[in-house]
Image 1: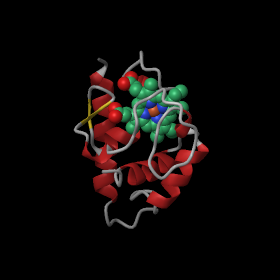
Image 2: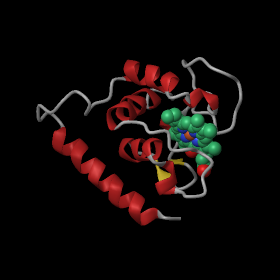
Image 3: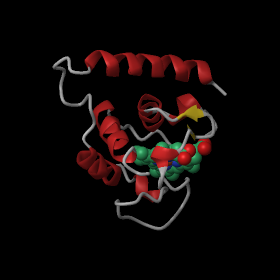
Image 4: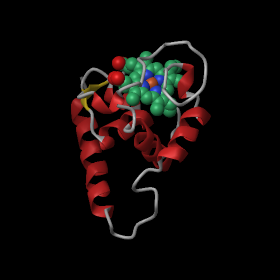
Length: 122
Ligand code: HEC
């Protein structure tokens, strides 16, 4: 897999997350799960994923996101950390060029909010 780029990007994201902790940076740092739930609807993630608490079709193109917080590995090869999850949501093709999950143009703030919500799914 193309892990190097992914890992580099994730380290950067992680550095920002830690660096911003308690540092008075904008609210986007710690995602807001309620906004995240809305964003999951707005970006139509439900078109492909079953997501508890988010309404939508029952079509399952991608894996169910139920119990995501308990998974060790996501997308077959990524350790499940908030930074990796956000990176995957924003640019799955950078992690795995062959993945069927499209790049949906998710903003950084929206990705953090989604992660905050998805991390409640245990
Ligand atoms: C067109 C269908 C499609 C859409 C829309 C889509 N995904 Fe995916 N998603 C997939 C597929 C297919 C996979 C499996 C990827 C793989 O393993 O290569 C996946 C994997 C994932 C995973 C990893 C799950 C796991 O257990 O490994 C997460 C998290 C995820 N998607 C979140 C999202 C979010 C958040 C959105 C909305 C911004 C979204 N997806 C939109 C198809 C989609």
